[in-house]
Every structure is written in C-alpha cells, then in structure tokens.
Length: 447
Ligand code: HEM
Figure 1 (cartoon, rainbow, N blue to C red):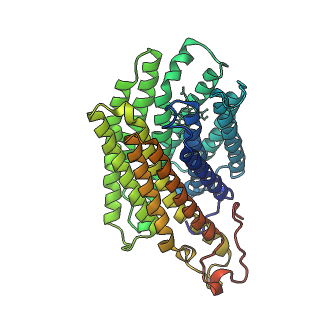
Figure 2 (tube, protein in one colour):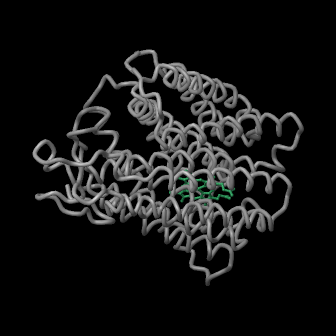
Figure 3 (cartoon, helix red, strand yellow):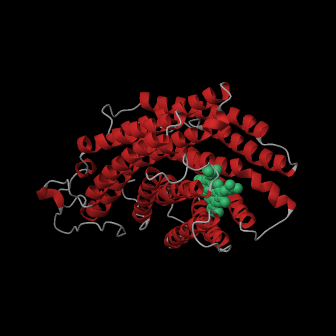
C-alpha cells in the first residue's frame, strides 16, 4: 500500500463505526433487545441495525474506499462521493432507528420515519456500491480478491432492496399481495447482508491483506477460486430460490438448506486457502493483528460447528440468536477490530511520515503501536464474545448482559489503542515529529 493515496474519510468511517459498536454494546448490556425481547421485536431490530449498518457496514465501506483502489491499482472513481455516502448512511441509520422506536411504541408513531430512513440508507449504500463498482470495472479482468468484493457489492444491493421493501410495507406505505409475501424474506435479507455483503467481502479482503501481512505469495490465479464459486452459488440459490419460493407462497427452509451446502464448501476452501497462506509465509513472528485474525477464524469455525450441532439436535430455530451473535461478534467484529489495529496505524504512519519519507529518519509502522498492551484487550474481547454466546445457549440473560459489558470494556480498550496510534502517542521522542511533519487529526485524514 506504500505510495497509495489516503482516502480522506476512511478514518471518519472507522470512528463512526466504533461509536456505533460501543453504543450497541451499551444497549445490550443494559438489557435492551434480544434476548430480553424477541428476535423480531423492534428493540432487537434497533441493536441489529446499529451493529450491521452502523458498525460493520460503515467499517467495511471505509476500508473498501481505501483498499479497492490499492487492489486494482486505479484511483477511486469518485473520491468526493465518500463524504456524501457517509452523511446519507449516518443520517439514514438514525432515522431508521427512530422508525423502529416508533414501530415498538417507544416514541410517538410517525409512519414516514421508516421509509425516509430506508430511502437515505438505500441512497448511501448505492452511492458507495456504484463508486466501488465503477472503480473495479475500470480494472477488468479482476484479480481474485476483487471478485469477492464485486459479489459483496451485489449482495448489499439485494440487502437494501429487501430492507426498503420491508420499510415500505411495515409503515403501511405500500400494500399488495406480492409485497406482503416478500415480507417473509427476512432470512434472505439477513443472509445477503451478513453472508454476501459482510462475509464474502471480508473473505476477499483477507486473501490480499493476510498475504501482505504474513509476506506469503498470493499470486496463484487459482487461489480463492473454489471459495468464490461456491460462495456465489450459495448466495444465488438463497436469493433467486428464496424469492421464487416466497412468490409461490412456499416456505424458505428447503431453499436455505440447499444454499447451506455450497456455503459450507466455500468456508472449507477458504479455511484451506488461509492455511496455505499461513504455511507459506515468510514472516515467522506474526504481528498482533494477524494473530487476532486467526482467533476470528476460530470463531467462524466454531459458528459452523454450532450450526451443524443445532441442526442435528433440532434446536436451530431456538438458538439461532446465539449462532448469529457468534458470527457477528466472534467472527466479523473480531476480524474487523483486528484489521483496524493494522490499518489505522498504517494510514496514520503514511499520513504523518509519507511526505518526508527518505529525507529524514522516520519510525516504522510498528513503532506506532504497543502490541503487548493491546493484546489483553483483544483476548478479553474474544473470550467475552464466546462467553456471551454460551450464555445465550444456556438462556441466561443476566449473565449475557455481564459478558457483553466485558466486551464493551474490551472494545473501549482497543479504541483507546487506536486513538493513541492516531496521536502518535507511542512513538519515541526524537522520531515522533521530525521537521516537515505534523500530527494527524483524530477523525479526518489530510490527503
Ligand atoms: C436500507 C437498509 C436497511 C433497511 C431499511 C432494513 C430494514 C429491516 C427491517 C424492516 C427488518 C425487519 C423485517 C421484519 O421483521 O419483518 C430487518 C431485519 C433484519 N435486517 Fe435489515 N435493513 C437494512 C439493512 C440491513 C443490512 C445492511 C443488514 C446486514 C448487513 C441487515 C440485517 C438485518 C437482519 C440480520 C435482520 C433480522 C433481524 C431480526 O430478525 O432480529 N439489514 N431489516
């Protein structure tokens, strides 16, 4: 990534994302939403969308605005759109959450809130998807990681299409038998969002980033091919088959079971590829971000085993909340936090020292972080996310709140480490700010 431009608003996306994560953890620790409320209760929808849109999707968009241009060695199609998308997504999410509050009777009902929030979110995500998609389009034929990102972008479009329909129907703005049937498509909306958008994109990004961080050769054209085909097949079956089933007023169970088989194959080949990269790495001692990425992979493997266990024992629908929690926090959130711990210091280093590189002595990227101090927060975060999953399985809501509070403390610790990196607080003095450099701003990059 050396020599690449810094996307000005990427750091702002990350900052907003961690604020949403902390807010969602605080609500869960206070007993708001699942498991104290039902899975489809309005309070649960609030927490779900704070995490899925505010935390994970904002972090993913910020990372992609920086990463996609590096991946295809082309500038971002329209850098100016990133701020507009940021504003649309942030305001849209706040209005959507207000719509959910009204739906649950917590504030006076105003039926326009849900469709307005949805409209702003659809506009924000579309802007981001077109910007990133057009950047990829200029660089055909696409390298393997970019093909994952492309399917991820298609998936977010499917997710928001369903989200928009739900918002219109639930607010009473749209009626009609077909739309009412599509309202039963919540599992398709969730699968396209969590599986297609967040998981496939994260897989694609990690093929490239892990190879880079571990100094492993990733130039095999076949690398990731089976995982990509199988993942795309799973998504296609879930969406196309799911919509057909809904239109015929049939249940989704068979379609979802059919999609699960290629999804499992995709994850197995992904694990195989990651192991291959790990074995062929040239960097023997791994940095904290890579070690913690491995912990997030462990959570993903545990989620797959848990899903199989729940299916085998016939308790899938009873414990689906625990399964989604493990996937969202142990796997996706753990992975994103681990990667932020590398990307934030790296971008900060590039911003602070890029202009004087080669002219004056500068610190290394690793001088911006204190891994031993940060490690304990990551360990705490993963242990707490696994413990919280166990409390959900044991149906112990109070213990769940305690473990989520611990996750929140761990998140605060990790955020504090990111802030310190931005402030160059751990860089030893003579090298900290050589002539011609200035300390980066906390929330917006100078590019
Ligand atoms: C335009 C943006 C979005 C809108 C308007 C929206 C709206 C909705 C609505 C209204 C529901 C409830 C449907 C029902 O119960 O009948 C829902 C459920 C859900 N959404 Fe979204 N959504 C959006 C984006 C997303 C994204 C990007 C993700 C994930 C990355 C996501 C994940 C979920 C999940 C997991 C559920 C199921 C929650 C549960 O049952 O507790 N949504 N969404």
